[in-house]
Structures are given as structure tokens and as C-alpha cells.
Length: 454
Ligand code: 2M8
Image (tube, rainbow, N blue to C red; front, side):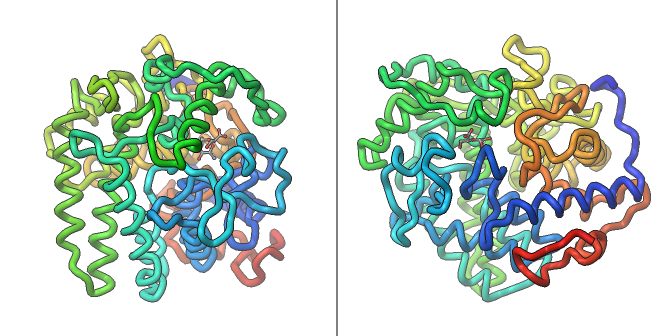
């Protein structure tokens, strides 16, 4: 199969089989009030994973979707930050590195957490679950927490250009992106042995190198030792993170209006940050990260630079240029979105965030294309479903062969594919939200934790 040949349509039987498999994964990874991204590789609750899982669960188990977000925000810090990991006390500290002993901090609720954050895609998720199953009480409960999450970013992470900065590659969610190679090279690693746990579960050539890990832990240790206040040798404004922040304001405007509150401040902030991104992060048909320490633009071929397509205030000519880049330089007409530009020397189709296709990144760009270029959005929808149909609910996929990489039974791949199937007419399969719950037969939400596949 070539990346240039459009993928064939998905038939009704195949769509049903994929739905059943996706629900199987989400049931298997459910922990009672949240979902683990993967039982073995990621056995705790991760922040942006939970938002994507919420979006998928909204399609068949909305109570579970709300619980996922409320569990995460239950571990929100007093300063408003939502930690990127909430540790499960029943999982041994040796199961994941860096674990609770490394981060050495607790949320006000008592849960051990990390001290860094991830892209704030949660307001979008809250709105999506409300659209699937309206629940004004849930919206009123989550709204102030979502606002506090944004306020933390504005107060603690504002860059000189009026953007928000991340202080660790893990905060980008695209941890090992080649976009971070240059800023990471400036980090002098501590002389401490790093105990990799990930390599017990996934082959080393699909994961970051030891040298990357030494720098990751050095940065995290320095941030921890400053009381999680002062950024160290890494601070960048990342287009995906800032896009998530801007789209959160757009979602908050809708949530505020639904709660009878004034949406105008959220609309203004969404428009302001979009304009700042265009001014400071855009160049030659793509958005790039800006190093907030040196002030320099970090030009790279990261697909993060296409995600501003989801911003409602993005000027039309910029959106058109992004679409041109997506087609000509990322080859999305083949149905897949590589996480890094295939023509670039750093591109690697199998290594974590350096080229493989990820369902969450593709889902974001698909969202951005649905109203602008439905023809291209259809191709990406088909490609996401094809990838999981071919390789199962893997963590990432070769963008050309669709070979699966990383861990198996990965939650956001399952969740977002459910959303795609529910939104998209695939080969005549109409799957409005409610039908998803019927497809897997007895697998509705009746007995949490006691589901049996029909
Ligand atoms: C990956 O990141 C974690 C660190 O947070 C890791 O490699 O151990 C990333 O893909 C990140 O985006 C994701 O949230 C996390 C859990 O799926 O795994």
C-alpha cells in the first residue's frame, strides 16, 4: 500500500467488528472511575489521554465519560494545574518510571501526582460529552475547574509573546518529537542512572533513546526541586499546546453560555491567542514552536503545526496554506497523517512521535478539516479506521504500511475511533451516537467493571 493511494472504504461488518474491539479495550482498561492508557506501559491516569477517552466514551457510556474527567480534575492542584499523571496507589512504584517517589508531590485530595501538565484538551472533551448526553449539573461542576486550568497557564506560563509555554517535552504530549531535539541538546544531563521501565514492554527502537531520557529526568528533577515553579533549561511555546489552550477558550465560551454565564471573555481570549499564534508561530505554510528562552522560532516538520486548523478564528488564508502543506508535504490524501514530515531527515516511521501516525493527532486535524475540507476529512476518517482494522488498537502506526507500533490495546486509539465511527458515514454505515452502544450487544453501561462481551 502506498501513502499516495487512497485507502478503500470500510464496510458495515468491518465497522461493527472495530467498534466491538474498541469497546473491549476501553472496558479492559477501565479502573472504576478512570481509564489507564495501557495496562502495562501506562498503568496510571494520564491527563490528555483522559480527555480523548472521554470523547470516545461519550459515544457509548456518557456516565463513564463524565467520571473520567471528574476523577482527573479531582486531583487538580490549588494553583489550577491539572497534573499530567495521577498515580494509582494500588500500582507498585516500580511499574512505571518516573513514579510517585520521583515526583514526590500530592494533590490537595491526597493523590500522588506528577507536577507537569499536558495539552488542555479537556474543555473540548467536556463539551463533547455534554453534546452527546446533556447534563447541565456536570457542566456547572466542571466549568470552574476548567477555568482554573486555563488561569494557571495564563499566570504561570505566559510567554513574552502572549502565548503559553511548556517547560518539559512531556508537556507537549509529543514527547520525542524532532522539534525538541535542538532545545533538548542545550540541557546538560545529571549524572544519574535512569531506570527505564518502558523498554520491558516495547522495543527500544520504537521508544526514546537513553540520552533523551536522561534529559527528560534532568528537566523534571530541576522543576520538582524548584517546588514546581521555575522552568529550567527548556521553555517553548508549542503550536499544539497553544492550540489546545485556544480551543479550550472556544469550548469554554459554549459551556459558559449553556450555564447561563457570559461567554464573551472566552471568545475574546480565543481570538487573542489565535492572533498571537499567527504573528509569532506561523511561517511558510506551517506553525512552529518558539523557544521562549532564546526567542528563536524552532522550524521543524512536526504535524503539531497543522493542529491550529481546529481554531475557529484562524484566518482563511492561513487555513488554506495549512491544508496545502498537509496535502503536499504530509501526504494526507493517502489517508494517514505522519506525526513528522516524511521528507525530513529526522523522519522515522516506527519511533515514538518521530513519524508514525497517532490517532489523537489525526483526530485533531480531522476535526479541523471537517468543515473546511470534508473531502480530506473523509480520507483521514477512513485512514484512522483502516489503521486500527489492520493492526488493532495500537499506540501508533506506520503511516504507509499501517503496521502497528508501541503498545497494544491503547485507550485513546480505541476511544477516538469510536468517535470517528459515530460521526462519519462509512460505506453507508450511519452510526449516530446512540447506535454505538447497541452494536456491541450487551456491552452497555449496566454494571461498571462487570462487562461481558456479547
Ligand atoms: C507518552 O508519554 C509518557 C510520559 O508522559 C511516557 O512515554 O512514559 C506520550 O505519548 C503522551 O502523550 C501520553 O499521554 C502518555 C500516555 O499515553 O504516553
